[in-house]
Every structure is written in C-alpha cells, then in structure tokens.
Image (cartoon, rainbow, N blue to C red; front, side, top):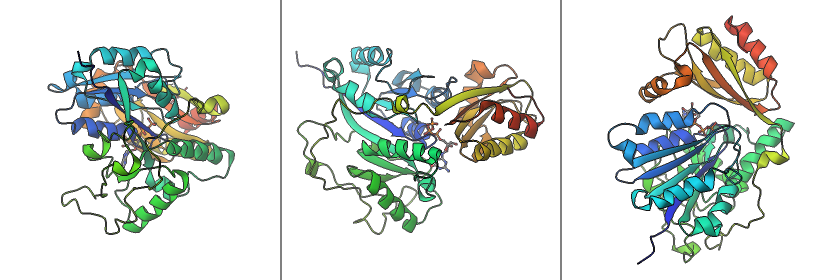
Amino acid sequence: MTPAQPIPVTIVTGFLGAGKTTLLRSLVQRRQTRRLALLINEFGEVTIDGDLMRAVSNSGDDAEHVRIHDFSYGLIAYGDDERFVPTMLALAARRAQVDHVLIETSGLALPTAVMESLQTPELAAHFILDATLAVVDTPLLLDDRFAQGSSTDNAVADMFGRQLEYADVVVLNKIDDLSEGQLLDAEQRVRACAPNVRFLELAYKAQLDIRLALGLRLHQPTLQAHQHTYTHVRMPGVDASVLADQGRLNGHAHSGLGAHSHGLATHKHFHEQDPGWLSFTLRSQSPQPADKLKQAIAEAAKSEPILRTKGFVRTLEGKRPQLVQGVRTRVTINLDAADAANAAANEAVETDKSELVFIGYHPSRSKVAALLSELTGTNWK
Ligand SMILES: Nc1nc2c(ncn2[C@@H]2O[C@H](COP(=O)(O)OP(=O)(O)OP(=O)(O)O)[C@@H](O)[C@H]2O)c(=O)[nH]1
C-alpha cells in the first residue's frame, strides 16, 4: 500500500493583535473545497478566537469541512502542551478528511516549538511544514512600536523580531490606509529583522489570496531555494492592481538557503525567560456605557503597559453581548454577524456578565480595575 501523503501544515504567527485570527477567518471563508483543521492558541483564560472562528465556519457544510481545536490559557506554544501531539495524531488518523492544517500560535509565542514538534519522527511521519506565516500590524511597525526603548518596548521588540526571524512569509496587515511609499518603508523594516523571509505579502483588511497562503511547499526536502514560484505582490480588490515597484516589493530573497532546517535548540517559550508578560481577566455584573468603556480601555492602555484587550460585554445600548477588541489604545466595541452567532453560542455571555481579558508587560490588575470602574461608573473586578 502506498503511504498517505503527509498533511501540509501552515503555522500562523505574529504579535498580539496583528490580525492572525481575522486572517484565518478570511482564509476559512475562501477555502473553496479544501478541508481544513485549525488549531487556535490564545493567551488568556477565555477562548474568544476559537469562538469567533466557529461563528464563521459553522454554517452549511462548513462544520464538517472545518475542524477547530482550541488551546486556551497558559499555553504559550504547543511544544510542551500534552494535548498538541494527540490532537495532531487524531488529525493524522482522519487523513482522508483533512487537506491542510492551520496552526495559530498565541501572540506571545514563537513558532519554533511547533516547527520542532513537526520534525519529531512521531509527527514527521504524517505532517510536513508548508510554511510559517508571520502577520504584522503594519501601522504599528511604521510607528516604531516594535522598536527598542523602555523595558516594555524592548520586550515587545524582542518578541516581534523573534517571530519574524523564523517566518518564510511575512504578511503586511492593516494596510487599508497606507500609501505605496509607506508599504515600501514597511518592507525595509521587515527585511531588517527577517532576513530569511521568502515572500512578503499584502493583506487588505486581513484578506489574503488563499494561493499565497496555503500550498507554498517551502519545506519540501527536495525543494531548492530558487525553484519556488515567483509571486508578484498584488493589491487585492476589485481591479487587483499590481504594485508599481515590483522589483523591490516581491519578497523574493536570494538567500541561497534551501528548505529551512530548524535546529532543535531554538527557543520554545519566550516568556519562560521573560515572565513579565501577564494576562488577567476583569468582570463586571453591570451593563456598560459603551463609549465610556471604550475610552476607559484606551486610557488603561495609556497608563499601564497593556498591549491587548479582548472579550465580550453587555452594554446599556445593545441587547446582545458586544465584542471588544483592543490593540494598545485602538479599541472597538461592536457586533457583526459572525460575532452575533458566536455570542449566542458562548456560555460566558449568556449571563449579564461582562468579561475582558487584558494582556501586557507587568501590568497592574488593580490599577486597570480601578480605572475601568471610575471611568465607566460601574464596578469592575
Ligand atoms: N483596520 C484593520 N483592522 C484589522 C485588520 N486585521 C485585523 N484587524 C483588527 O485587529 C484586531 C485584532 O485582530 P485579531 O485577528 O484578533 O488579532 P490576533 O493576531 O489574532 O490577536 P491575538 O489573538 O491577541 O494574538 C481586531 O479588532 C481586528 O478587527 C485589518 O487588516 N485592518
């Protein structure tokens, strides 16, 4: 009997709030006939990303064709997680129903633990790394928010740099309002910290052509560096115009490297070395004034080293729970169709409770709780 072809695995990495989950949701929607399995890892005790993903994939035949596995609080990467290998082996046992596995690492994880795990004989018999994609919040990159500076800046810059260091593909995301000049500037900055990147791709509103994301086969043993397909960076949209200066923004690095081989001595858990990264959850039993809460979260991110906020809240205005997304001081509170489906399915929000997860570098839980309580006039703890 011919052995089954290994299942390709794409790892999606990127700093907190870069847009990994949004990008995956868009890939799920554009997957056509591909049968996907998704492993979602988040840094917080409330699973939000997995629920959001379920909301887009639970319609029609999608539920059968898209399988989602959540790995919530405490898992920085999959390397040491006792559920990771069994989950992968269970997928391998269902080989006939899985065309591609997508793994989203948490915003504070390095992709190396997964890469190493895929190289162990147990998993290498069934899986092959297709590519590692690093998603970048481009406006923050251009605003020097991943540069060295304070201790928080340094921790962020280190994490950002290490995630890019192992990327085959860097996806410049959140570029909706950026000019071509800014994109070229962003490219130069990426190249400075990701010398091995093979492709640089543009995602408008976290939408990436699925052919630029899956099936890249960058780690096939026989593949040489110069055999890969040369892909022009296209501006997605109605006319899909091609960027003028293709020569500079094509992501084609003549590094001379063959398929990357990642040693087994690379870092697994970034914050084993840096325990300053913390997350905590705050809850309120009172309906929330949405505008004041939005302002309060932004204030908290200014006065405390909070880099990410997410959760669901009951607002005074809306009957249904609203999704809160904060990346530093940029905060949105809203409910779209997919989120509504999620909200209905989410046990945590069936009560009147509001629940927010905060992630930061040495943040003070009590100060954030006090600030939210003061600015919203409700009790948060
Ligand atoms: N304007 C704009 N916003 C985006 C884009 N992509 C993502 N966002 C927003 O950025 C926020 C974070 O997106 P996520 O997809 O949750 O980011 P993530 O990388 O999964 O975040 P973590 O799970 O914290 O690591 C959300 O509010 C998204 O709606 C984009 O291309 N443009």
